[in-house]
Image (tube, rainbow, N blue to C red; front, side, top):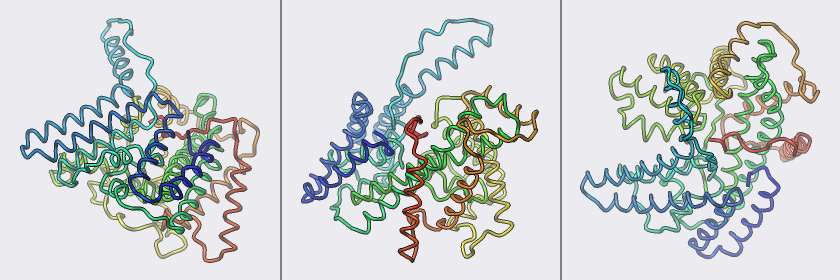
Length: 483
């Protein structure tokens, strides 16, 4: 089941009504119901993989208890390694097994020996496995580092692991935020629900009107890159930047909004990264839950920036390579991670990686300064360039795309695959960027207008846009489901 499906819009109101009006007396009853609803939500995709979620839940629940109850450091570390090996092993088999086998066969072939590839398997990647394995693993890590006391309630922990609004594509929550809310009593709050509905509406707009509408253009350009000129290829990768942003930030908005309907506040996952002034700020605003996960559980344990400059650079490279590999079993993602490491390191060495931690562009102005506009533009260009590797099917395709871009630098008017006017898309994206800039100070308030009339006009335009752009013939799944 996906957020932008008719099934979900039948499922959500039913769960909401039962949750608040039937099982509202006891927190444990609500948790039991939301756990069943979450398993139904996931099981409608493929019920067989529910056993993986259950296995990960059981392992880390008892591992957390074992780590907490042991005082000997060796035993605590041994239990932690069980959690890490189990979760990484689970993720590694389903996501990376064939990648390693195929890479090994290719390597052997390069040495002059030809071997038949008989070890690859037909493996289905379970939706959300990259997210819930990291979430359960962080629970064990937090207990090991004595940041958290484990819960003794298995039901609460199982609900924390499988909470359906963020189960399949995040945000990757930490127990200190989500689990503490699950174990606490929740009361119905009208304002919280209306805020949730507004976020759901805005998230659906970004998915349907922005991401899905430009997806056919991006698909056409990347699939047939060798037939197009540089201007079209630049258009394609630029539109992909908006597609992936609208798709994933739209998902996150819907997830956060849906959680609000059940009295739960999830962490922000996107903080208007398209207005970042350097690559470091971009990673403070893009996929926040993943970047903070790597910072807390990999970068800092490696020494972070407290070690020598050389070791800090090493740590940065490790983080970005792992982050790239997390996104998928393809050398393109590793190359994408390496590019971001190369972009980030100069910012770090100049000491400019933390200068925009708590500020937004043009904080006290309607428009960015010339300097800020130049910084935003340069950051967008650099990040967009890296997405050639993120979007391409193979390293060969990525380099072929770039070669075509640099050797066929001519200008041509791109023709939409379905014959639609491209000017309409430029106007649409321009209006979207302007609106996002207007709301840049608060990612959770997309419809914050003093005038009720203006607010209702905004609702009407967003709903009208979704009705006009909705296309049931295209693949409407979210991009990050494949990760």
